[in-house]
Length: 218
Image (tube, rainbow, N blue to C red; front, side):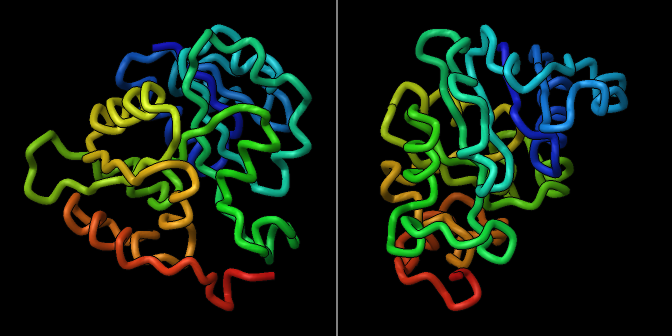
């Protein structure tokens, strides 16, 4: 699969390593320019490109940057993606880092806000697991200790594509509902950072409260 990654931080860099190792054609970008990604590209075989080229021809695009940076992405940055490409949002809203985002503070799901900024439907995934665990803890299908990851979104075909990729990476994908349900996997919810199995993820999603905890509010 041809995959574009916008953001090369902890999650973006980890996904670059994992996905290239699985044989995917990965283009990776960041805000500082492709020359700063020479080491990552050299180690993985990924193509380091300007952010405006990361989505070019991609069947799946992963946006993995600080929440505050999403509105600052160049307009039309996703226009070059293949028709029907899945757009994955891994972003989390951390008010102490991102500042106050009024729509999220008043109840909008983080990924619904991201979708509005991008002007494209998104699938929420990879946001509740630590990068090191994503790198190291994948297990073959059927393993008793296999970690599960929730996946939320409204585009069923895109969601299926993301869930297949999660399975390929060594994790059990769990359908977490539509994008407006993605608050159930935001920071501060029971599933966030918990490394649960599939049944545990389902229970944690069901137990989530829409009220943002004090430490997760601006």
